[in-house]
Length: 632
Image 1 (cartoon, rainbow, N blue to C red):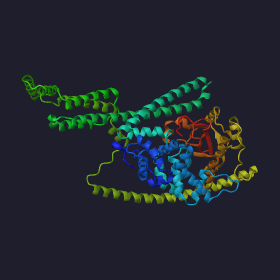
Image 2: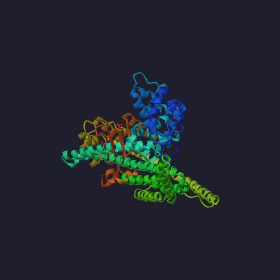
Image 3: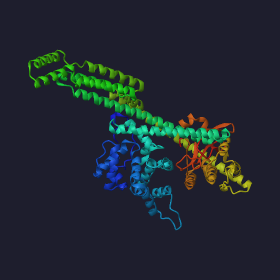
Image 4: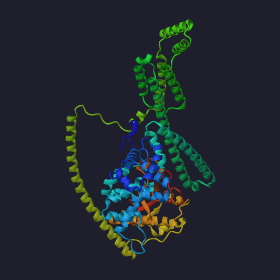
């Protein structure tokens, strides 16, 4: 992993160990001409890119280096292959399609489909590879889907990280990777904050200006659409669900704009600071021999004012002022003053006409130049003005160094006597280990007692269920699957009839159904039924077998069951994540979701629910679309 330039804190995605330059080469299919076409474009965007792609080893070393330096480089590299060669050809050249196709092909070899059987889903192919012991190939596919594909793909394979073998290979990389709705914009913001000042960063600033204008236009359009939606709604309930989606979309773009604009301003400040340095140091380099002895002091003065900290903002008025002062420094140090100019003019006239008058004029000019030696005082005065301006900018906006210090905590200072301190720490750690081992023994004993009690309670519960089934004339087995759901209006009665005692719809869920726009009503019914059958049994009876049955049913429906948001997010938006149910407040901490890859209410399915442990039932709080504050 490469260090970030300019002392900027590393914000890098950890690459798995198998992602070497050679692995990248093998899993792409780029010929020499392909590499040349890509290198030509990449050299315009990334400083230091190998010249033309003719050196294959250098090309793939660069891909590997930049994939370690910038979080979304590999994602954008794959996208550039698609843009350069077209969809049909790119599928044979990109890493992700080639590796995932290899997984499918290998799974078909290991488990050929029966006659008439459809081709397995990718998740089924990964399961086949896992059962065959090909954990490395599974890990590569999990990493590719988590880091190089769309965000929904990451959720689809996240459960694989619970397998220790997969977690050991890719867990760190997947957890440290960041998912972005628009990786191109996220990459732009990251590089604006971390790229070295120079021509490439100036191009990124221009890109950021254009991106901000685009976002401002998008925000204005969506704001107009939101106002139109509110004005056209008959009441709050009819506007609420769509309004939540519109507000979320608007908020997301506003955050993107603020992030890019802030990073752009910081990048522009670094470029201007570097330009100021070049102007001032160039002036010192051009100083004449008559000022040679003053050069070290002036250079030290320039270094001191520039090392005071790169400001995070450098607006146009201050930039023009500093640039004008730097020009005065250059003029004072490098350009001849009036006495030097007069002496040069007298020398030229005497050389052209060596008479007495011109000779006297030359002698007078030489005396005047000698009596009025060059001074660095005007330059120092201008430098003082630049120093004051930079100090004001640092106080107003802060500095890059301060921002980095805030982002990365400083390491603890070394103790004065490391040997003694470390010995004390080791002794303390050993004592803690002994205490922990004793505690583990105690907890294991308590756990064994609890497990025995749990098994006894489960046995008693099963006996009661069998007794109830006998009294009701049933066999006590799993309840039959409910019939298909016909419409959203039927859902409350349908759930009461077929899932009574296992699934309940809170009042908030009933209200959300009034604005339901998801196209596939039958899938909503299957998802709710799944909560009342396989999920309910998993929660009430427990055991790995029932967990696997639930996960298999999820895969069959192409759904995932995940957390509805982080605890911090739920705490900040408490009212959005809770429902009133039978005098208690329940947190909607789980949800079922599909892999639509969009937040369009017609295609995006979300069912937010809580498990009521006291009543042993699922309480649904919102469906079938997104809630307002979630980022899933």
